[in-house]
Image 1: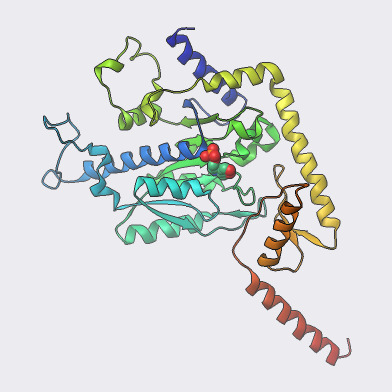
Image 2: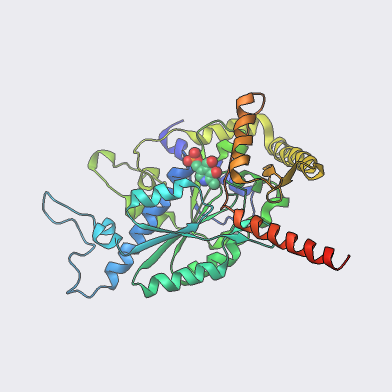
Length: 376
Ligand code: PLP
């Protein structure tokens, strides 16, 4: 296989996976290494786009440099990555987003606002509402900040919650805010038509990523990233020394312009092998089986006197806790299970709700007292 075929087949394999999904129109696919890398790339691309927009809108007297050729100097600051503008930028994500979003904001040198999630009607889980996003945008614009990216999550790490893309993305499109969807865990489930409703609105997002190395039986690392407008994003990452020029430049996608590293592994070959060996039906069956097993376990929890579900189980994830116990006792409980070493559980912590439990106890106590006085 020569380098031309190598690029061509890499793209075809990721396109093949995309064909299994509805709602992902023609985009630039990039077989990447991890969800964290994909989020960072989205941050860098969105930040550069925002810097370009802000600098373009400056009057010529305010503008220190233009977007033309690098000046003939040994010291050069790339205009799309001008730190003088970063201070004006603010990124958004849910308070349920993975820590990799915080890391990306940290490395991109921009502010991050974590939007407070609430329980949604669709999934009974912790997601961001349109009203919360709108309010944050207004407040930040009033403070002179420029919101530039919103990281939505399909399948949060804590509880497998789904941010409603179809409601949030139109706001971001209107406000010229880049939307990146982190579907690291849940993305594989889009291979099953019955789960595709969680990706409604995907045609409105700027970038989308999932970890094929999580639930798709593909070994680490393989994490495809799709960019709605990969061709434009290339200019934000492009360095073009003469020793990297080649004759196919005009016709093939050069992934080095959309990542930090120059070289890359042949990750799509892993997708090819797994598809050839298992086939899409077997992967779908495995995904459906994991949901079925989770349903069985969740039913045991619901039937138990000791435990309760924290949120409805979804896509194979069951979040449960000891009934009427504090976070601290539940943490101790999780540690005890893990130190027993027969099975392993992963802890996750939501906002402390001891005050709600305390309020409920007071309400119950007073109600009971009143009913007793009345002889009920
Ligand atoms: N985003 C979500 C929602 C995740 O659940 C995870 C990992 O569990 C990540 C991002 C980070 O994934 P990676 O290890 O591929 O960077």
